[in-house]
Amino acid sequence: MAGNTFGQVFRVTTWGESHGPGLGAVIDGCPPRLTLTPADIEAELARRRPGLQAHATSRREPDKVEILSGVFEGLTTGAPLSLVIYNRDVRSQDYDALKDVFRPGHGDFTYQAKYGLRDHRGGGRASARETAARVAAGAVAQKVLDTAKIMVTAYTVELGGVRIGRIDAATIWDNPFACPDPEAVPAMARRVEEVRGQGDSLGGIVEVRVQNCPAGLGEPVFDKLDAALAGALMSVGAVKGVEVGAGFAAARMLGSENNDPILPQGFASNNAGGILAGLSNGDEIVLRAAVKPIPSISREQQTIDRYGQPRTLGVRGRHDISAIPRIVPVLTAMVRLTLADFLLRHRAIA
Image (cartoon, rainbow, N blue to C red; front, side, top):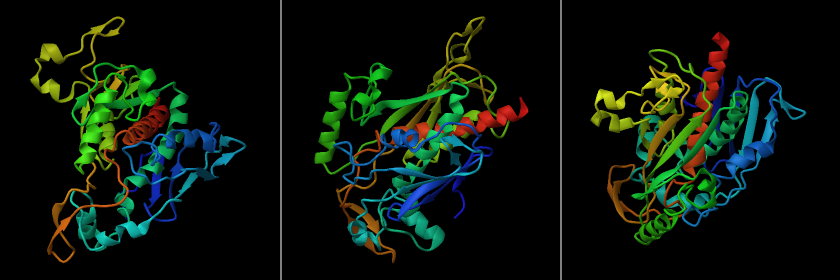
């Protein structure tokens, strides 16, 4: 299966399935002499670990990581890093009823069309469980970004139509929604309970911000930084749209409104989202990702089976009500992986 490797210099290949023995990542191109321990990676994995939020799947995975290669005496060696996370709470029998039925909104139909078979146990490679490997690799990428003091922060700006009114970064992980506005949390909780009672699910919007990114990262024309970041975020299964800076609002602005004046002390505004002509401009990078509702819902939906016969399906088992907040560390990881790759590419020519 192609399409499992990300990056050019900092290259990450993820492997494994939702209900297989485990999953993980192989990272090639990681610089030597960076401090790295399993605890560094597990701190990031803890934020996407299942079974922690009331509105999340009850599947409980410890998500402990083993570093099989590429580290000696607590430092990266420059050799490929191999990371493994074992699956411990697998109940494949929960998916027996889905063996011959395509779930609406999932990749069941398209995987069958492409490969002529599919792993119905949780979706195989199409499962959100695969993103644990991305988060693990993203923790390593942050070690590369630390050398340039680049920091990536992500949080929920909207959940089920409930929007935040302010941003207090210190409170992002003080609630079950990765919400930076404490006043919006109760409304989000009520919305989740309302939709849970209907047997349905919710989508939302996540914002990602990058501080201290130097100017000049990115490649001209066909490998622009904003294009790469958008592709990285869109590679996450639940993401259906990406904005950079003002995003779609720019289409309703005048040029005089959208342009960011350049002053001796820096940019006066940031409609560009920190990227001009595909290159970082030294300002804060601002991205937003539209996250679709979880497709596995108990409400009955129309579908077909593998023989083309009509079926009615209500999905049972352990599933999230929303990909938020567990998708927040995943999107953080994808931005980290992109920036680490471009940073190393930039250093090669600087």
